[in-house]
Amino acid sequence: MDITLKDVSVTYMKNTPFEKIALQEVNLTIKSGSIIGVIGHTGSGKSTLIQLISGLILPTNGTIKVGDLAWSSKRKNLSLIRNKIGVVFQYPEHQLFEESVEKDISFALRNFDFPEELIAIRVKEAMKQVGLDYEQFAKRSPFELSGGQMRRVAIAGVIAFQPKILILDEPTAGLDPKGRKEILNMIKELHQSREMTTILVSHSMDDIANMVERLIVLNQGKIILEGTPKEIFKEEERLQQIGLDIPDITKFIQRLNQKINPPIPLDCFSREELEEYLIDWLLKGKKV
Image (cartoon, rainbow, N blue to C red; front, side):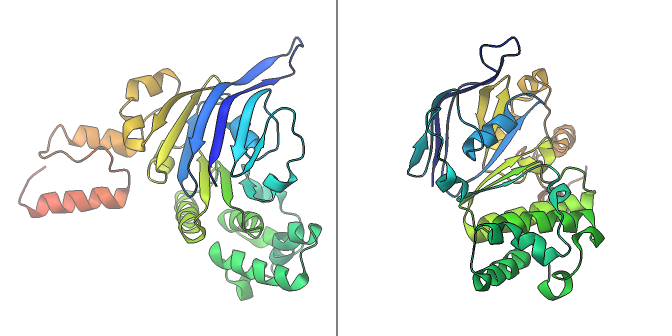
């Protein structure tokens, strides 16, 4: 299910003194089954972009196509596409409210009149995929859980619908390093096991560099860069001009490469991969 935006613009409060252009003539294609990152400074248009793709808002101009369904500013019946796209907004655990984990995950399914037998299956599958044991957690209150566990419950409620496209807005915001790593690993596993198109929005360059196949960089409502993480993070000066940075691990490798030879590739974005390079380098009798 490819996603295509053609000449898409969004203007809020058009023809008023408060008019604001959020996106300008965006052209973008996201291939089915890919995992894509979206980065940009606050106000760059990231939230508007994901709301457009998920059918929560309409474009002012241009056309959006997801799979076989296309729409523009004139089409308003988007229920078909909303059933295929799951969106996990920032701090999704703030939206938990039911008395048990099981009831919270199943809430939306019941609202859409899914059969009880299917709901039970979907809840168990979703809990398993987010790493929550059904017997241990199903009857517990979500408010008794850790922050990371609560976020897993919220994500389970979205993937219980079995969306074809999963959009996550700052999925690691507010978590400690252990929680961040666990959530990112879970997202990777979900993407691979469900073969979903996954769109990840993040302010953390380190998180996103090691997760995605391609990066989209937004600034002032326009796509200014698009490519692999290696290609994007070569543009260090341009990124800094718009308030972004390269990953901390890339900065460390740049400094390290001034002292060692052969150099470590700058597209080494994970600590584990860096450790492998260094161990191999040392085993060959080199000295840092």
